Length: 296
Length: 272
Image 1 (cartoon, each protein chain N blue to C red):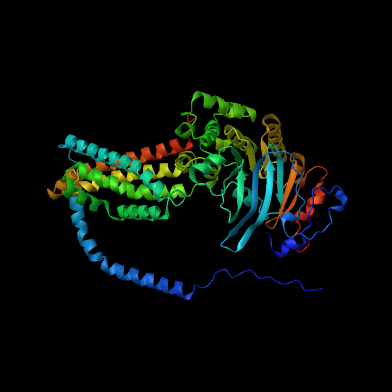
Image 2: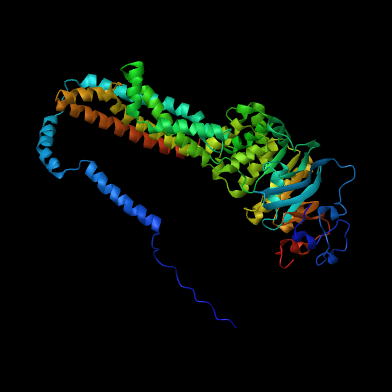
């Protein structure tokens, strides 16, 4: 439960608020995310990912996450927004336990992975495609090999180390994934020689190789020019349509957040202060999320 | 209206503190003491110049009467170095994984491996050669063992440091998809560390060639034994031939190493 003074005067946008003109300056007393009446979730939807009471602190002092709760349904597109240092990336990493949370529970695809270790944790992560801001490809390897690495998620071992070792079916699938992101003609190119936009597309192709049920993207277009950023976001949208993949993405671009998500989650100083459908929201109504504490 | 504050540039130089000053003075004093203990003597150097001239004159022309046996010894020297370096590099690889902070499975394993590698590196190759000559007898096998241990000491450290310095991003990406530790080493760490690994491996080959020449002096096989015998028999003309052969060998290996380094680091293999 958030207890800091910062959460005593945050403005909370509730899902049932429809008079958006009233939202921009509205101030509510809210001590925790439970102050929400609940985000608008589809009835009978299966939960793809949920976190409860997620906390993260460093050295027992610096509290980056102050006990946040959210749930994401199968097939949903959720944008996570907030100022620098608000805890967005930490929340995503904690949700996949790339960073160990200090407290809280995490359910992934119906499994409580909070206590998972080793092979169990790896298996749980295997159907989640994580796309990073810096794409995180191996620059000295070919594009095709980087995509083949997606097969590591299903424990292909040495056959997924390089396209040279991969079986014919894996190679064909990798080429299909590259084709889906429009880069099949660059299969032999060294990944380090791609542009930023191309690299991010290859990273998405690698994620597709996992046959993911959900793609988690941490500021996937932050290092791209506007056109390349639009292309990448359009690609995510197309994957949702074609494959029904659940999408969770962090973005500083409010236009993207509003255009490509069904629902927005807002973080401010480690607390969840916004969880509502995107429909009807305007960027200027979210500006307060980026105001400093003194002016908020 | 408040006056705009005036900012002055910082001092160009800052005076050293007490501790650095003491360290500087201590270093200079220790160096002066070292000069006296090193036996530096200008007079002895001057008086030795005629003897140097005599030896140099006896080296010309270099002898060719034992050219083929010497050439064979040079070849054995190179083969010792090659086997020692390659086996050492191969063995260094798993050791380096255990000695890399970001890959080692446990801090205890990390510290123990680092200590073993440091021990291998800090004991001189000549001491290892003496140890192996006493253990397995005279000959190239003892020298090869010494070179293997010396290469592990060198490559174990530099491989580990190369692996520690790689961008953690690709490893994080593979971790996020559920890849295992071995997969991450093979697919993210090694490809990124390849330039560092290549440099260290090629340098270890150069180092092994230079070391293998000296190891013969203590009976560990190779051209060094020939050199020792020639010097003891005052056959400076034969010694000159051996020195020239060593020069050609070391230069050739260094040239090959530089060529291989540029080829390996610049080329793109579509197979990978």
